[in-house]
Length: 238
Length: 289
Image 1: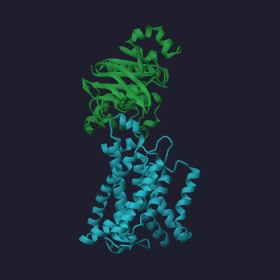
Image 2: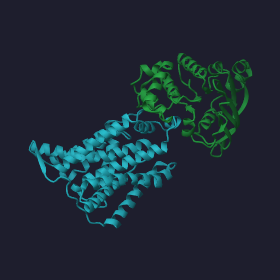
Image 3: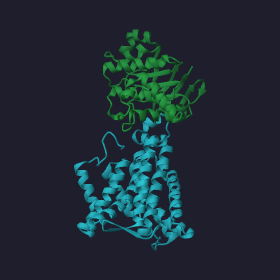
Image 4: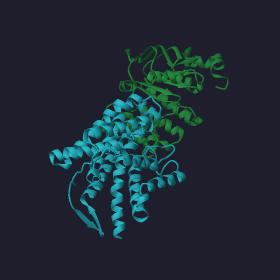
């Protein structure tokens, strides 16, 4: 397994948020973490990325326990988070945003520029808007740049937090297609989404989270076919 | 015409000093939200070190280099000892800590060097007459060194990977963490640069203003006015704002009233904030540039 999370527990102060969550993702696999707003998806992903400390449990990368390692170490070793809300550097150009994404890998400028050129094929917006300030792009374009920035260091594990949030349907399709293409390229992808259909349709497997616990897991098709999942955990409108 | 040229030269010289301190303040505020008002006191220490090392070795330039290097180190030490310890504290605590640091540095200067002003000879004595105005070489050195520094700082921030990291961390801490940057290391670098710039300002100014424990107070206030004027966190804005402030102060003193000299920058600040609350170069969505 590329990424194994076992019995992970996290809390904000005295308030527990995750109550022993376990998930696993293999190389080339896209795994969804779905659930309603506030069930602990972002906390799980931030803990996987090293931005939220674990109270108990382990996070393993290629079998190696990285639970005590900080975010910069995890990024250098191939575990990168694309955070909810994108958190681009708004005053930097699209090209500069991507360059910053490659700095932690320790690559030289020429290698970083070569990587930007590679990613332009996957995300044409990078080429079209190269010298435009990232803060001036549309939401969908910003999301493409954010995923591109996360891919700069050729991560083994890409963790995506709500990448389709607030996007128009056409852009949702484009983002989901890009996520599938990244997984097909051999990257292990963890995708947290409220958009049940978009995420499970592109995932091999999925975990349904409720109140900080995994209450159901299965293949994407199984979970999509389970009407109880939709009704009980995600609301009828999803 | 002679008065105008003379005033312009004085304003640009004064503005260059303000801009040096303000650029450091903007850099540190942009990256860490720390109101580092102790940069005025850092400039004071820079002046004393230039006087001391220059006096011992007979070389003003060696004194200046030692002052810049020592202040960069002082910036790192004070950040590690004070601000990094308070990184989870509310902003008012950082504000009080910065003022506490001013008192400690002024007290230390008084104990070490005494209350009497210390004079430093100009690096290059003499003056030149331009358009009827007499400008000392020391003032030209101040303008020249400051311009070179601003160009260097701009190139560093825009052309190097380290500079990009600093700008990125200033715009989104979460984004910087997500891509594996080390916000604390970037913050330390910003503090070292800001403190070194303040030390350089003090070293450049000491042949004109002398060194004494409170010499940095007006600099700290003016630098604060500059970064609010320019838009908090905008380094380029701080450089332009510093020059504008120096010019306003000089022209106000020359053409209106010398007594109101320190009030002109504040009046300008009030005017700008009424018309453009985010500052001249600040943007609501984009804090940098």
